[in-house]
Image (cartoon, rainbow over all chains, first blue to last red; front, side):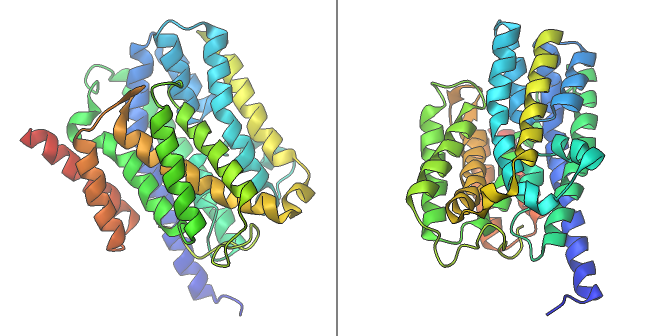
Length: 242
Length: 99
C-alpha cells in the first residue's frame, strides 16, 4: 500500500527530530573534541579544519591523540585513515540507496559517517532512509563544527565537560540507535561479541581502534552465518529506529 | 601539524568517496547484504561499550556506567531518543555530584 501524505509527514517529523537530537548530542561531544585538540597542540584553525575537512569523529580523536602524545604527522594521518575505512564500508551500503552523481556525490561522500549511516538504515522506505542520511549528515555537520569551534575557543572553560555528564550523551545515543537493530539472535551475538572484543582490545590498540575491530567481527560473523528470517535483506530495511 | 591534518583528511575523504563509487552489483550478493546488516550492530555496540568504559586507552568504571544503565532502562521503556540521552546525562551528572 502507498503511504499517505499524512503518514509521510509523521515519518518526516520523526526523522528530523531524531536528526536534530543526534546533532545536539554529537555537537556536545564536539565541544570536548575542540578542547582536546587545542590542548594537544593544534591551533584553533587546525582544529576547525579537521572537523570541516576530515569530519569523522573517531579519526579526528585518533589524529589529535597521536599528535598530542608525540606521534609523527604521517603516523597520525595513517591512524586516522585506518579508522576511516569503516566509512568506505558504509558507502558500499549507502550507494544504491542514495544513488547520487556529480556534485551531489561529492557532498554526500563527506557526510558518510557513523551517525548518518545509522540513521539511513532500517526505516520504512527508501525515501525515509535518504532523508535520514541527509538530515542527520547536515545536522551533525553543522553542530559538530559549531561545537568544535566553541570547544576550541573555550578550551579552558570547557576542559571538563564530564562534570555535567556530557560524556555519557554519546554512548546513550548509540544505545538508543542500537536497540531497534538487534532483532535476531545473530544480531544479539554480534553486538555482545563485538563489544566484548572491543573492550578487551582497548589497552592494545590506538584510541578508536576497537571500532575497527568491531567492524572485522561483523564481517567475519556475517560471512559465516546466514541472515535470520527476522533480519531484513540489505535492500529492504526493517521498521524504524529510535 | 598541517601535514597530518591534510593528509589524514584527504585519505578519509578518498575512502568515503570510494565506498559510494563501487559498482552496485557488489551489494547484489545476499552474504554482503547480511554482512552490511551486521556492521552497524557491531559498530554501535562497540561505540556504546568503548565510550562507556574507557578514557583514551584506559579501561575503567565511572559515573557513565550508572548513566548508561539508566539509559538502558529508558530504552526498555521505549522512551524517545532525546529522553534516553537526557536521562544518561542527568544521571551521570548527579552521580558525579553525589560522589
